[in-house]
Amino acid sequence: MRTTTLLTAALVLGVTGRTLAQTTDPTENTDAPFVRNIRPDRPGQTVTTSMLRPGQFQIEAGTLRRMPGSGPATSYSTGLLRVGFWNHMELRLTQNYLAAQPRSVLESTPVAAAGMAPLTVGAKWLASREQDSRSQVVFLTELTLPNTGDKSMNIAKPVASARALVSQQIGTRYGLEANLGFTQSGFTAADTKVGQFLYTLALNGPLGNKFGFFAEGYGSGRGTYAYGATAGLNWRPLPGLRIDAAAGRSLSGPSLTTLGGGVSIRLPQ
Image 1 (tube, rainbow, N blue to C red):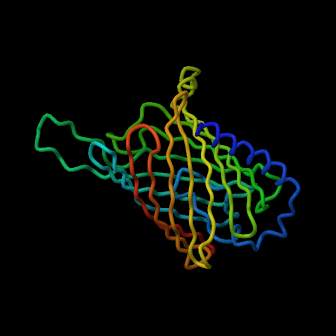
Image 2: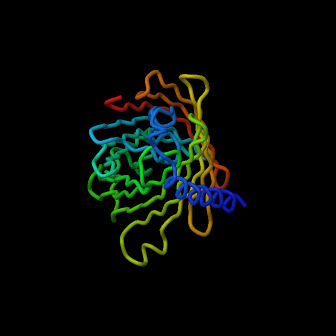
Image 3: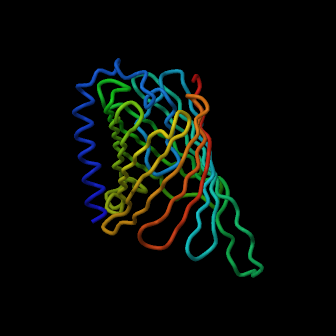
């Protein structure tokens, strides 16, 4: 039921956004807060349709604490560099860091993986006719590279992923955003058959002039899906600066709670 509801909503939003993106005049929308203010690709699973202009860059950094129902908690630091490029394209570099867990007193206990995760390179591509329209369609492609992080975090094959990103602005300050994506490790037909799907649906908006909220539901898997939800608050002292805090919870499968926070800055503002 959750799969049908979320996926149907994402597809409807995608069809509506694609149609409206071709008929809406973006010049009437460039001063809307939803467009003008910074919209990072954090802290949840949903990647926004927001794209940087040529010459702009944006840094997004944060930390995430994952607390399973059983077993030790883990802490991740996340870093993303976004650079606006010409021809309605945005280039991206992502790298995460997994903090080392306390060593067990038992010598037979294996040392858990820790350190820098493999580097991910990617790009956003505008599919709509115009940038900053009320309805937006963007494609995101990413590739995670082997041998670009610590040995304990290395991957055997490149990991490729692609997403369709859709947003529908509501008024001048609220927005619905949906993602539909696919990820696979390696490039063979056998790799594709075990690739994983991801879909998300998120709502974000203001709480006064400087504060805002974010809430999403998502599912991932293939055949059998895992579901979760994330909600958070953010503070934006400047149009190009945002500080956020969020909490997440698994809705199926093993119990998992997440807590995180971070900061994002866009220059020029």
